[in-house]
Image (cartoon, rainbow, N blue to C red; front, side, top):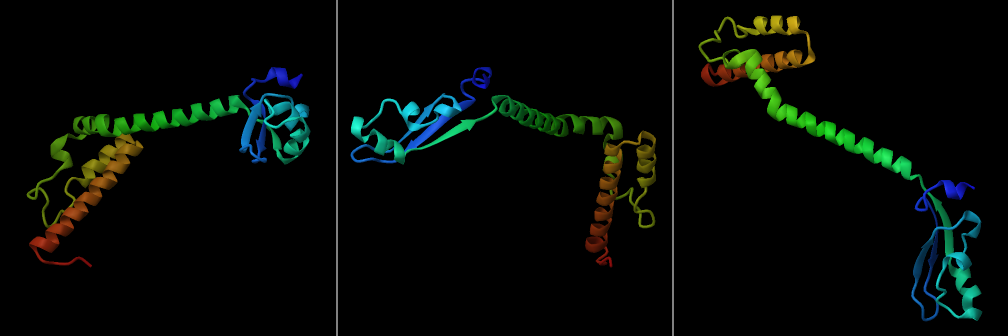
Length: 169
């Protein structure tokens, strides 16, 4: 029998009965088999007396519902796992990555002063950063190199616009 192999919460019959005479509308749920999913088996206690039962039950809409609690549990576990991984990644980005950056590159190589950047060589240490990114060959270093290059370009543009009053074209 299929009904006994499932949890009692996985199958149910739901009857929605609208208001009838002086009785308000009700929703009834009961764990019954699909063949017993009707008003007579689900609606207990019957709110109307004997002669009105048939008229009351004709107005009720009963539906057999089946769900898989295993699928729901697996979906929730996957969702929470992804959420946990994203949380760990956020912790890594906010706490661990800055420490690793300082240890690998040092403060002097990440931030250059205006004296280090000459008019003839705006990207003075870009070649060194590129060599390091090639030797380590991981995505993080490549992204950091692109970010560093962009920062240097922005710094050079600011210097050109504000100090020399020259707009780059």
